[in-house]
Length: 141
Image (cartoon, rainbow, N blue to C red; front, side, top):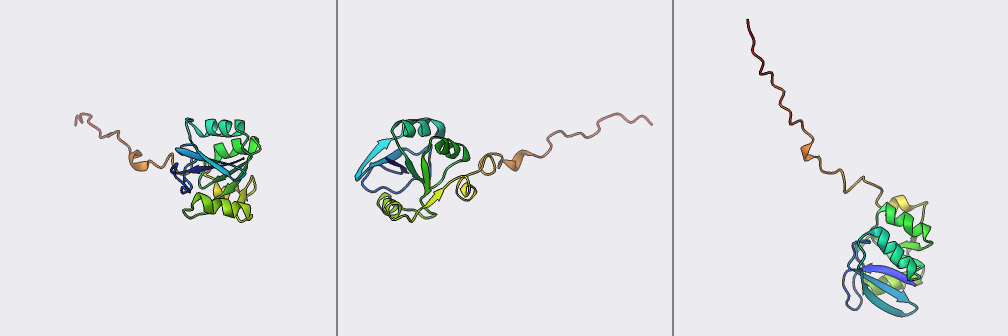
């Protein structure tokens, strides 16, 4: 079974740029496509859920390093949907034709968000020193 995070639950939705926080997942079993609401709370829970459902292939646009490692451990193959916005039908066509890049431990650095480099820790407006150490001492001459 193939799982792909998608943006809406309509016919042929665009692939979601989110993974764990994606609202919907398209589940593809042979030629049957079902779009299900993602009711999990975290990337880890999504991975557990997909593994339980028997997913062996996942296509993603954007993902963090942690869920990616969990997917690898669960034995779920991950493919990158490419850099552009793409519709579910098109991405499935490319997957069938072997045109998507499989992401693994070797090339994950190119496709997967690593740790805290981007989102967290980019809040640097408050790193100046708020301790005003002007000397208010009394100078007795």
